[in-house]
Each structure stands twice: as C-alpha cells, then as structure tokens.
Length: 95
Image (tube, rainbow, N blue to C red; front, side, top):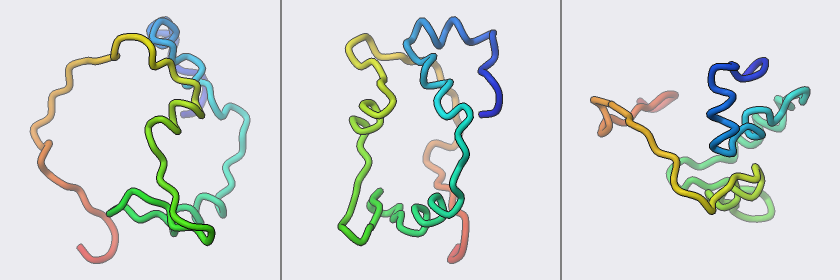
C-alpha cells in the first residue's frame, strides 16, 4: 500500500485494533533479491518454505505475534459475495 490508508476507514481500523497493521512498513525498502529467494523456496502444495536449515511453515499465530494483532476479542466478520469459491486460479508454467 502506498501512502496512508484512506481517512474514510481510519476510524474503523482503529476501532478494530488494526490501525498499526495498516501503517507497517512505511519508509522501508523492499529487498527484491530476498523476496525472489523466498519465492523460489516456497512450496504452495505444502504451504512451506524449504530452506537450507530445514522446512519452515508460517502459521496464523506467527502472523498474529509479528503484527501484534489482538486475538482476545470477538471475531471481525463481514459479508462476502462470490460466485466462484470452488474455482482454483493457476498461473505460471504447466497450466
């Protein structure tokens, strides 16, 4: 995301405890070589990174701890409408 989140949703993000998540990474440069290396080691069939030191799986608890997300309140839910829930989207070689 570039720039600050829209002021139209700022209060909703603050109320839900997600404001700090929307501002993570401001002023940080992305290391394209590191990102490429991680992409090459990702195995989507097992949701695992295969590294020289072993396999690494990122869990929802890992994300919660790293981002400091609140998990002691009610679930934040909303209405989602989709007509293609069962359709799998593939990209890349071998299609």
